[in-house]
Image 1: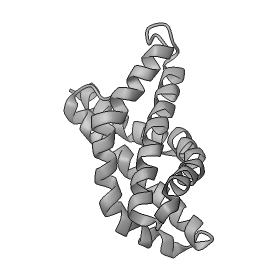
Image 2: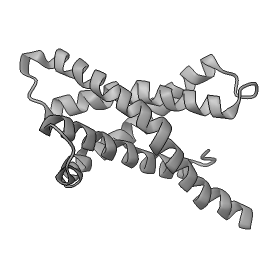
Image 3: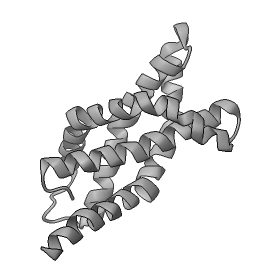
Image 4: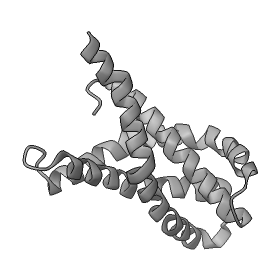
Length: 157
């Protein structure tokens, strides 16, 4: 959807916020045994660290790798755009989930000698949530906001 580098940066910043905040809330609720109102406030402590990390990973690595993987599987001119977009979003999760789980394991889990096991467990717990959140909630909301802000503005000119 983004057509320029600045649009891509804005899209990435907003998407990263939606994904990171939700995933932090999810992980905190797993750690404390359930969801509560305090989880939404607690998440802001980690968000300060994890949001910029996600933006950097997305811009420098995940976006390019996900596009390469998607273009290997599909020709955009011959593929339904919805399928192409869903596959691209899925590939971003495939790349970002292990990376962000690694950072979370290093910073927020006292894994010790069980580091690899804790990291793998974190990936396994996070992946289904990240994929569903990306496809069914964050992706549609951010794309809708993006269309409202950028596409509608271009149509009015």
